[in-house]
Amino acid sequence: MIGTKERARHVALYESWGFRVIPLVQACPACLMHPEGASKCKACRGGKRPAYVDWPTYSRPFLPRHNVGIVTGKESGGLVVLDFDDESLARELLRCAPEDLARETTVQRTPRPGWHVMGIHANLPSGRPIKGMDVRGEHGQVVAAPSLHANGRSWELLRPTPPALLTSFAPPDLLAHLATTSRSNTNTAPRLGVKEAPFAPEEADMELVEGWIMSGSPPLLAHWGVLNGERGRPPGEEGGRSRSDWVVALALAEFGMSEAQIAWVLLQMPGSKAAERGARYACLTARNAVHAKRPEHATEPKGVA
Image 1: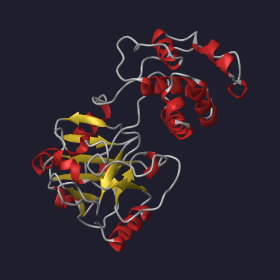
Image 2: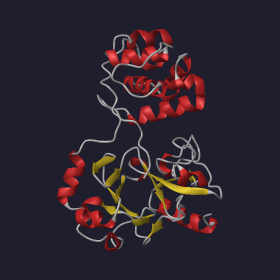
Image 3: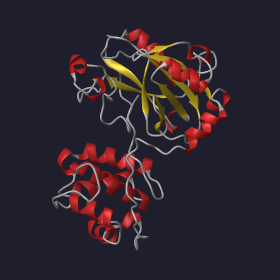
Image 4: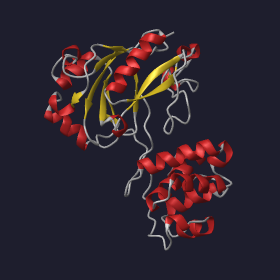
């Protein structure tokens, strides 16, 4: 178990740097027995799952058995984390040892063992642009020291060095590659293809919303059908009802609806996952959709490293 004082000291340090810190569920004994690896454990994801389902909206207290998580992207001042599987790859791409970079920016050793090299950069997407390295930017989060892994090892902060600009230590060719590489492990929504609605968002009711959705693209209509209780899955689409909740919520967010309005629509749909799981799930889906809306392609919130 993590010492309360040690965790509080790290949390205070991260918050002084402008990071948004959240509690994570600590790894459970079943993790090491999971056939696909600790991170696939549904109970705790190897110590990486947020402890509270409403973490995007509210700040919650840490309990004795909680790990420490940091939200990446704009919520932490543009924080980007380069997550390397091993030191040799970090040396090759950054052209120096991670330990040496700890004098310039925030670096932590992960239990794999691997490395988290943190920096500040605007609008760098999350993804896996290079085999052996993940990028956690917008809509991502990472586990932070002094959290415990299922294997008994912990995340270790090398030095209390605040994050520097990514451009100050990352080679230009690496930055260019990261900026132009598509999100290879990102689930991309279909083109929503909705027309401008003939009513204002604040005037929306179910009849108006349905009439407007029916003018949209075939993928959007298929997802709307799922939420209406129709059986089957939209052609070429993976995922179940939660995926349909997400795509419809994105369309409503692009239209300009508020989080409360989107959540209300999802709860009215008899086949939606929100109708099954309740208001809290609907509100989280709505908030993430409003936060992640894009003109044509939108991405789901990313996971953790």
